[in-house]
Image 1 (spheres, rainbow, N blue to C red):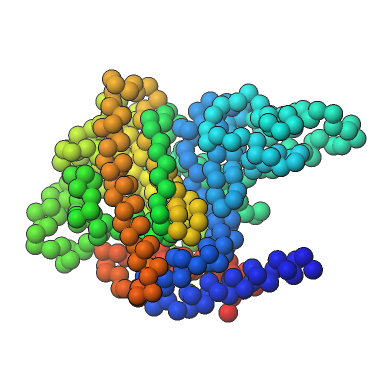
Image 2 (cartoon, one colour):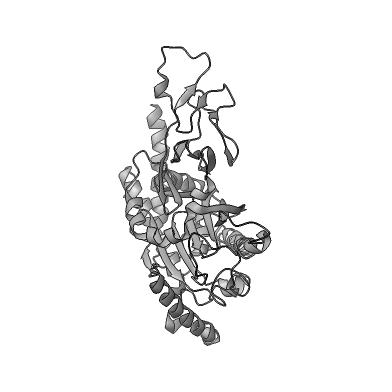
Length: 430
């Protein structure tokens, strides 16, 4: 009876989200209900966020045994911790006794994990070590923390809440690891981390990141080094941007030569629509000096990452669906993790990484290091907040994408494909 009561609403919600998708016109933005309907949001949690591989952070955030971070998504809290054998593990942040949250801070360091409620104590490998007054006939070996699937890819950490995660992460890892390893995230440290709650649906946040159509007019700090013709074909470059594009082509040719000489991968790999973990990776030039996100493109950190000795490596940009984008430069890395909070609120966590031996005030100035993306994030928050207001308006009618927004279209097609695939598996597809 209980299953029936719970199952029917879930099936009804799946039917509802599919009905909204049926109303979508290919090549146009999504119908408004897909950005606003609480039932749609609940179905997305069930069909995507509890099924797909999610970017949760980097190994640099848990450098020592006992260091941990938490990642909260859709009612689940994941505890990522480096154990005493240096292995990074993930567990549900739920005590096996009465269900209390084990840790309540976003990050920290522990010797053991001690529940604050009744002092049940777990080792960093998740095994139960101590449970006061527990009856001796209870098998404590069955009461370790429940593991969450975790995979490291070149220092990036992904988790899956699925009982049986798909193997797509391994196929993606094979293709992107070579791009990431020169930056040696295992020898990096966190210089800054900023959480920003954006007043918009998570898909609007992702869509905004998938294009730079808005960059020229919206991101003056970013476009000091981020070429404004990104994403445009030759025949789409307007005359007023031709000098910028010509400069881009020269910088691109120089960067490719440098990468080839150093044996660093740079070519575009784009597989955004058809696989569960859609992704795109490419190394691209930066304007000016070509080293970092600064006003003139010069490096922001004196000490380069890993063993790199050439600062002019542009940006290696990786993004994955549903929730990440990462810029890897010679002097620092900045990662962005997106997590939905509600139909119209989304957390964007930005993290800046520098070499583990870089010293603030000597090798870098924190304010300067983070200035471009702090400003850009705030500008994007305004863009997506205004869009959320617009798609919630009864007057909203989905508009057409242009070619510069093809990655937005790719994201939307991926979203529809994944929702339909998972709904069909659960018996809600038509």
